[in-house]
Length: 189
Length: 303
Image 1 (cartoon, each protein chain N blue to C red):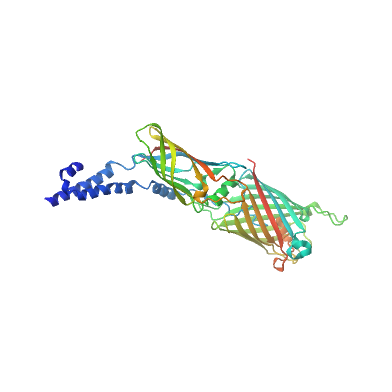
Image 2 (cartoon, rainbow over the protein chains, first blue to last red):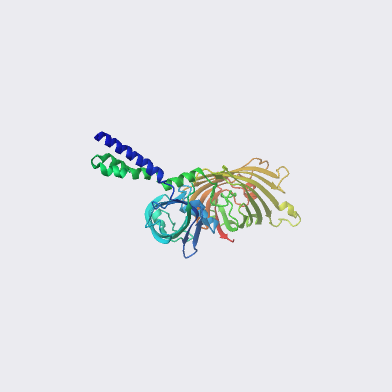
């Protein structure tokens, strides 16, 4: 009798596993980045350095609050083409480290609240092959099947082993302000 | 339903609890790794990646490299070649004497650059056109090398030595045609082959061919993110009647600091114009006729 109940329980558990896997489709709450803009700005005495990247890829899971993005470093465009070359070749070494990545959760995100809400992105940010756990405050705006996210945060170059040489004619600030503007839509199956 | 079973038989639910505990793990594995998903996608759809910075400067040392500046960039290049190192202490090992070339290069398009220059060596004016034909790239399309077509014109403006023997203007003109073929093998190592034709309207003696065929080979070895070791050699195929001239060889360092590239080098050539260093190099590098020199470039983004 006891043996039978255990077997039943096991079977039930198996059913539950299958059921939870099937009836709660993992991707139903997934949002996909449709238009993203990552930019950074460094203010320096000699000249300001600004670059823009529209080639980021990101997935956001509204159910779990998990978020991940990849930013291809080579797709940052600068006003001065040679700056772009130096950025890739000397600073970010994009042949070796082609992407900046983030993986984490939006703490405080409430999927049922429409309209703007304040959240904190917590997770691992990888730039130039160096990973740090970061906390970035930002805004999430839910509107129908679209989600807009905005955040601005400082990146200290030294933390990511991005070296600034002593003798450079582009004076580069040690801390760069990164701005992220992401718009997501429900992922199509 | 399952939860009901759980409450009905509380004694036997150890296994079930284990299963339930595993449930979130299983789910995490199934849906997790958003970043992994993104990385997989990125790898499955590679886009075109152009290879950048095959060389640091628009010159390897004496000769042009495949590097072209982007549209709207003006480059100012100032270059010096001092006297021979083996000229002794009295000449301060060549530094008392200097040849100079100043030049402006402007990128009309991303693959089209034009330039003008003036050298103190034989008071030469020069102009060139550099046209990008192929760019080394990977991804959706693979192109193994960058290819650039190059042509230059040099005008020797030295006054005639004797007033009776005036040289016709056409006799002052020399043309150079080159195909620059380069590959960046790794971030550290690039190599360029440069098939070259130099045509001189006027040569010193009748037996000398007006056309000189040459093949250049040049390379860069990156030592640090900002310093590279460069070397360059041109082999001339037909040198009948020109035994006094040597093949140009050069070795030196590129040092890059933001908008400037400093190139410091040693070469047996004095001229910084193609026709000049290819056909009028009088120094024997391995005999000690070495000139210290530098190229300094500064870029200005005009649009």
